[in-house]
Length: 239
Image 1: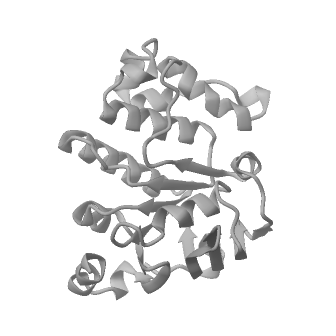
Image 2: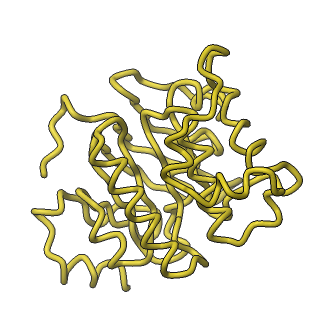
Image 3: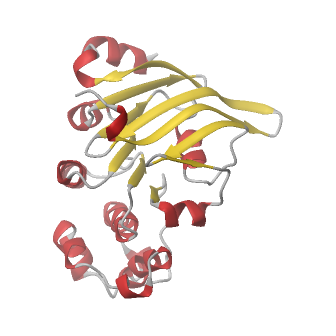
């Protein structure tokens, strides 16, 4: 499936990022279309997390441009980008351990107008365990349950762009399958663009419409799934 200019929700052009004097990203380009999953792949330490955290405003980029839904974004803080429609499900989940499940979900209200601040029943349909456990503290949940909570909290902000960083990491196989089903459902509903950072190759390959492969802070392969050879892709992310 190709990505036409009209479909593009996210365009990243020439993004460069430094930590102190160390350059982490070198002119990275990335596109993500509404109704598609764009997967960023590569081994540990190549800059995948740095890239999506820069897009989400967690790290200030050194150079380059980020365009969301046709609007060029300046170097804005994370809460401003969240209001513009960017949601991040971080590696490590970052739930609030002393808040209840329901209270964790309600933190997503901060970017919504008061009239929209209600928990949609759809969240509990996507993640039934959260309804059962909504009065438990977030810190008492298992890793897989916390991951479901982190995704639900992001979705409550009604994002145009959903960034997901290693959602399968440390998660039991049945929950991985369920999370994959949720991502596929969100993609097929066609209401948002999804950028997925993932090292679990089969999980990523099954879901993705487009692949961007990174090595040492640079893009070494990029293209629609139909144009990418599976064996070559697997080779490129295994080096």
